[in-house]
Length: 125
Image 1: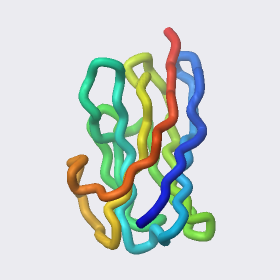
Image 2: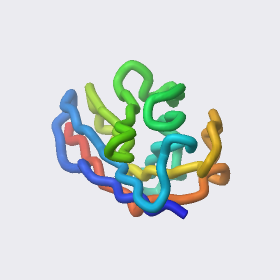
Image 3: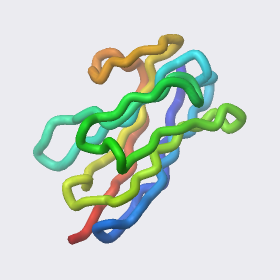
Image 4: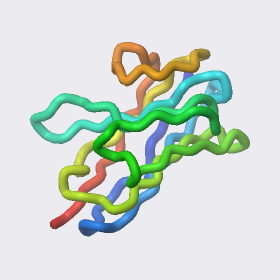
């Protein structure tokens, strides 16, 4: 199993930027897929982005393409989500999740094995 801790959330203005971190312990991310999901109040959890290992293939939801970038640092066993040009509709709790020992393009929650507790991102208008 892998333990995941998200950090970097906060309050920003429309058009601002944040970088979220997902620090993994217990397992290396190099052979796994790490995903970011988000859930706004009263809404279902939705897919944001995934990355293979710490620097492989990436996949983004249409709603964040061109604004968000997912990346990784193998030495730190950490995956990041750089969020630029933030909009109020990006306000959510952001979760990272890992599909252990798999490289997948899935955007389904059920295909991910371990989840962090989330970090709050609030974008003011």
